[in-house]
Image (cartoon, rainbow, N blue to C red; front, side):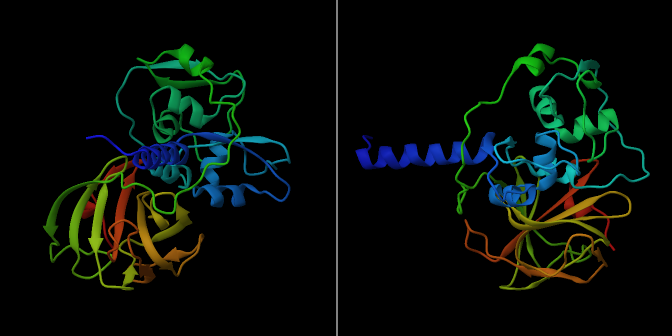
Length: 299
């Protein structure tokens, strides 16, 4: 089928916007910018922005400084917005090798170019979310990767201001829809439960318009904000280190630092921008890896 010139232009525009939205880029700091304002602009977390630029909590950005804006990755966001707990972190049994940190390296960059996730790199080296690496430092990476690629591969030097689409393409892959087990406690009442797969696994829960979303596992609120591709989202970390991510909320009634008790209100259900239905997405992570929300601990 032959496409009209208008269709070709629209298709190319869509691909360009999608590429810009979901690829790493660089941003030059302007007067009045803060890490928080920049992270909010690109709908990622401050912790991700710090990790991508090897910044500590005390570092101050300067006008004219060029920052890497990392691709939004919820797995990374969860790992970098969690706190260490006194439980043994199991790492996958793989051959490892040593990498010597070079000038310009970051945890985010080393992980990405080594074919690892940030959470894997952090767990392997027992780093926490405040770790700042130094030139000459030795870190462990999984073997089977090319060390030269880690040291020499560079992000594009073009400084851009990516457009964050209000209606991003639906990258979710939907699995089976099952009836909610009456014995399983969910954040909303009597939901239709649909498995969702992709970069992050979870479940999509149907709900009534503006229905109250309740806490299914007590813990500390680690992050509240708008996250690219997920709308309003919050992370709650239990005392055992498991993180519950509630996404697609219409409103949020807790703030970072709060302690959410089981059964209390976290906010209300939002409207999915793609399906236009009232629903939320629930994702659960243990040691930086997604687990089945239906099997995650409650109360």
